[in-house]
Image (cartoon, rainbow, N blue to C red; front, top):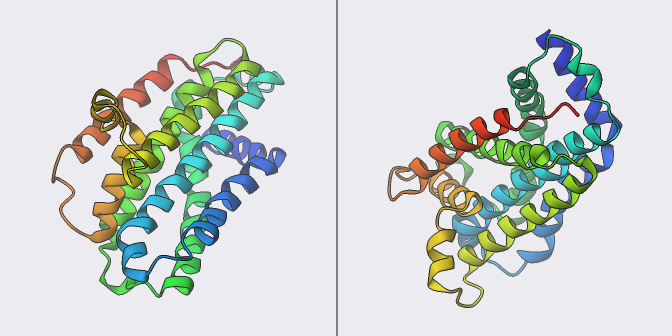
Length: 238
């Protein structure tokens, strides 16, 4: 059964290639367009983990969540409802199938960034970084899957996915770049936004320092668990 549903997820990737292409290309566009004026130290310490977090968000929302919403819209998932496959099987295999995509993207992205900025890759704590990379991907996959199943109308869901994605992107970017002053209450709430948590934890992991400093890592674990449970509760095959 697991093998069959994995095959289904790969077929979804092939049937909706534009989502995957967009997910791959947009982070490289940011890399080439926005970071040309930064020195290698600033990029290595700050922009690299920021872009990696944004890249994972793009892949989880424009690929995984949008593909699921589209599959709901065209009634493709109704066939799976007739099988023994449960929501937990679908979500687990969805994560597993996208790990290959994540691995290919990460290697390519780091290779391009290294060619542009000559990063000090030998000093990185790679086990820690890979763990946080997978945790970040899992968290955003759960968030995206929850949003993709939140509305009964599958067509409206696609618009909601874009709204949530850009809200997380704007809040995360604002908190990271400090684009002007946000209201105090929004800054306080923003500290617990998935995008803000991910950017901070990814920065710590990329720098190889202690991930238990501050609230970000624990809050990220809690967020992952909460949205994992919500994605199971609200999962729709139709």
